[in-house]
Amino acid sequence: MDSIIVTGGRELNGQIPIAGAKNACLTLMPATLLSEEPLTLTNAPRLADIRTMTTLLQSLGAEVTALNEGRVLAMSSHDMTGHLAHYDIVRKMRASILVLGPLLARMGQAVVSLPGGCAIGARPVDLHLRGLEALGAEMDLREGYVHARAPRGLRGGEVEFPIVSVGATENVLMAATLARGTTVIRNAAQEPEIVDLARCLRAMGARIEGEGTPTIVVEGVDRLRGATHPVVIDRIELGTYMLAPAITGGEVLCLGGRRDLVGAFCDKLEEAGIDVREEPEGLRVRRNRDRARAVSVETAPFPGFPTDLQAQMMALLATAEGVSVLEERIFENRFMHAPELVRMGADIEVHGGTATVTGVERLRGAPVMATDLRASVSLILAGLGAEGETIVNRVYHLDRGYERVEEKLGACGAKIERVKAD
Ligand code: UD1
Image (cartoon, rainbow, N blue to C red; front, side, top):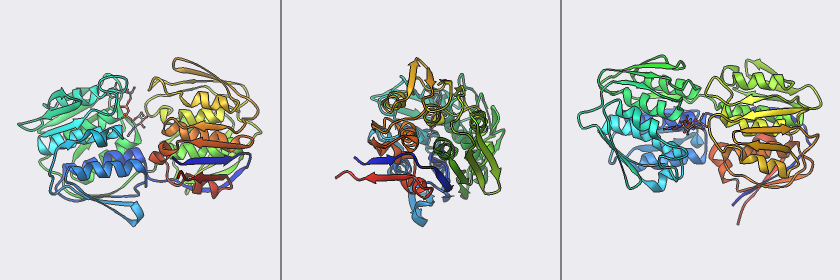
């Protein structure tokens, strides 16, 4: 398995282009299943998760062709051959559940494996299932698979989510576009990826109002047509690279960055003493002081502070002046990066969903283990600011969500290299 070696202590200066959003692309791709006509996505990121979704769609009979080195995904679901999302693919990526709503809407049936190891347990899909039931689907869980049917087609309905779920909102939104009548989704997720999905669906002929607010209203139509849609930029990649100069010092322009995508995050950076400026080309970040200031952060659904930036923020706060408190409110057990940061000399105490970070002057490089996607990049960020060499092992997680990390950071002066496993 590849590792990444970071030699810390260098200021970063330069520009970093931000790619299309992984999480937007992973919900836009299944939207192709809703139409017989082609759907083309531009500004797609080139990532392992996108290849997994490609394999899944192809297993259902969709054509997916990556053009322009993977930047463009030309898809067609004219000849669907299946409605089974097999465990072998779904176990690799939880977002596979996003084919459920489109398959039901188009084919009237779907059999989708429950995402790996999480049945109706720690990271459940109950909200997806309940939402689709409200549109008339019949659900049955057998042998690790969701068997969903809508023999007489889906009909509009009222869906009120007890908690905000990005994926469940996406699944119901996609299914509702082809349901008979009106669907109202309450307590809907408001993430930019939902807004992007709604825009794409609208370009395909869907009738949707209210995306980006807690109430989305969908008038079902008989069929959707083809479209070409540019994927919104990746706000998590953006936030991650904004943290790099905040940690090392220096000045970086994140090309394509927009403050409205990362507002709560920018507020916290500024509170920590980091300068953020919105320019026509993107977001420029500069650290004005020797060390950042401690800040307290609580993750929340959009427009709150994103859980997907919590690990990276912790890498900054590990060397900030003072005591920071990080509260993880979306996922339990999302502090796996904390013990690794402690191995680099950080002072972090975790109690349940709360991490107390007492800033130290400097971290020291160490061999560390990446445990998930965002954790792995937080260790790279920490390594950039640390003294000496940090070896991040098991970086396959990183490749699921970040393209060309070494190149992007290297171009700004970071000393970072990938060591290929034999
Ligand atoms: C998406 C993102 C992920 C991000 C998360 C929260 C994608 C591919 N992934 O994940 O990167 O961290 O939003 O911003 O877009 N829940 C239930 N039942 C369900 C569904 C969710 O209880 O049926 C819970 C989850 O366990 C979690 C919370 O709801 O505690 C929010 O999860 P959700 O918004 O659904 O996350 P994902 O869509 O899986």
